[in-house]
Structures are given as C-alpha cells and as structure tokens.
Image (cartoon, rainbow, N blue to C red; front, side, top):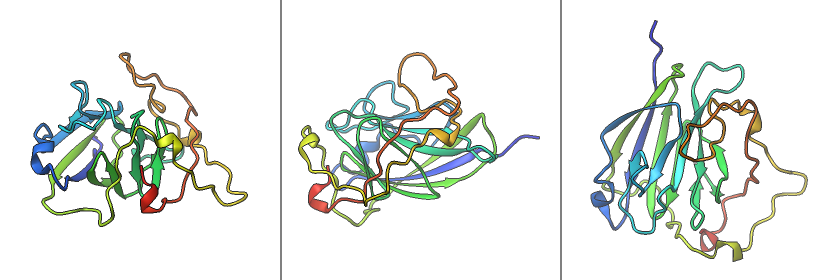
Length: 204
C-alpha cells in the first residue's frame, strides 16, 4: 500500500521585493529525501532572487526519529556571512534545529512560515508554496551582516548545557553539502548551542 507523503505548506513574504523575489518558486515541488536547498544558486532546489542571499543559504533536511514512523525535518543554516532566525533561535553556519508543526523563519529579509503535515513515506515529500501579500511575522526583520562574530552572545542559563541533535537518526545525516549524495550516518549530528531569541537590536 502506498504511504502518504509528508506535506510542507510554505508561505513566503518579502516586505520590499514582493513577488519578484519568488519568480522561480513553483506552486508545488515533490522532492526525494535528500536535503532541499534554498538559495540564489543554480543548484538550489528553491531559487530566490535576492542579492544578499547566499547561493546555498539553508536546507530542509528530512529524517525519521527512532521509534517513529513519521518523516520529520530539521532546518540547517548554510550561509557563512548571514544567519537564519527560526522559532526564536538564531542559527549560524552549519547549525541546525528540528522543525515543529508550525515554524517561523526569517533570513535575508524573507519571512517564511512552514506548516508540517506529517506522512509515513520515506521516499519523498511535497512542498506547496504560497506567496503572501502581507507580513507573516510581526517583528523587525533580521538583517544580514558580515561581522556577526563581533555581536555579543547571550549566555544560556546556568546548567542548561548544550543539546545535541545526534540522536535523531537522520536518513541522510546532517549533510555535508557537496556534489556526491549524502551517505547514511547512524547517530551522526552536529551539536549546536541553543540561544534564546535575542533582543531585536542584536538580531543578525
């Protein structure tokens, strides 16, 4: 029996560029379980026309958690000069975070809301795109900067430590984006330090 595909319903908005930034975005895209690349490069699966966007800015990476039949996702930041804001967390280069059912994302001035409708198929998933004429996230935009290293970082509460994502059991592992397809990496993962949502003045 054919298993249902996971559906990602993705709403997009840019406050100044409008629909012009999303000219190459299809209404619907079916993708296998390799990482889905977002950026301005020709090899990006979702190409966005913004000059301050990296060629590979972020990726949506499907995996299956141990003991679960559902396909779930993490979002991984791939830009060296910018960052991505996801549900109150600021991700730097190669940091990643699991996605929940509803996710608020900003990067390069773009506002993106991702609704995940889980499915059990491990072969593919579907992205359905909607261009929103009005803002999706009512907060100041995160601005890109080449000097984010100098921004003071908020320290986590004492004893919180770091949360590792290595137990997630990625189908293709947290990808090392390259020409060859990602190889399975049982238990592989990149540790990141979760940050609270910084004050608006400190957003990258």
